[in-house]
Image (cartoon, rainbow, N blue to C red; front, top):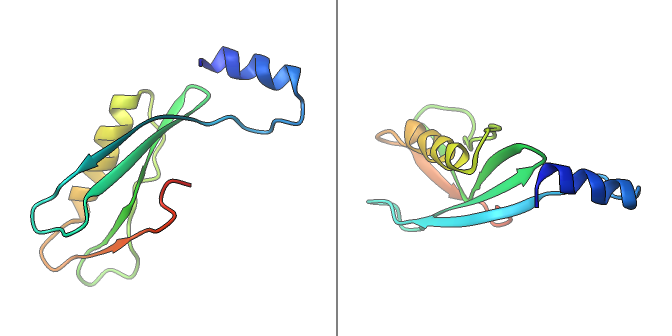
Length: 103
């Protein structure tokens, strides 16, 4: 579907508040990480975002990090989400698996 098709469907059915399309799910094995990194790419209107199943907390950091950015394309969302993961995967970092990661 396209953003225009989303808008048309929402006009036909006014109770629809948001349409999200799952564009793809990518799974990557990361060296020294037991659980594969899975990233679900979703489109909302003309924006794409990546939802990762793993969150990273750098050594000494208070909270875990997952990319929550909005991107102009599927490729940009995948690259941004992966880059965010590796940006925080520093020596001594801890990883937490998010059980409901795709929502």
